[in-house]
Image (cartoon, rainbow, N blue to C red; front, side, top):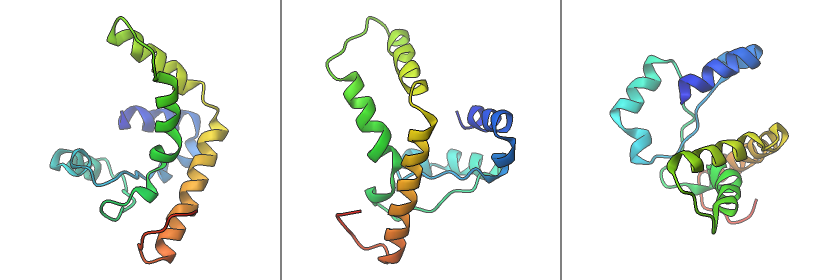
Length: 123
């Protein structure tokens, strides 16, 4: 997936292709040796995340709630059908909404840094 994303960014936004940074939480699947090894080999910088800090996960605030609302109560006859539906749904989200989500993420990140990583409830 990351390879496809990098190729697409290089094709569509060559001006920022070298500025890609990966931000993910400390889930075991993200910190597994194979993942860390791939990221190192592909020279993909990772934005560090304090352990168990949900305040910084953009998908938790923006993407997952939208996707949950979209999928709730629906049933599909095959995995392929749900994959097509989700792919179409994600493609239909305007670029500006993703940009706003990541600007909000930067605000949360700054607040977390300014608070020394302490817990806070409001943004």
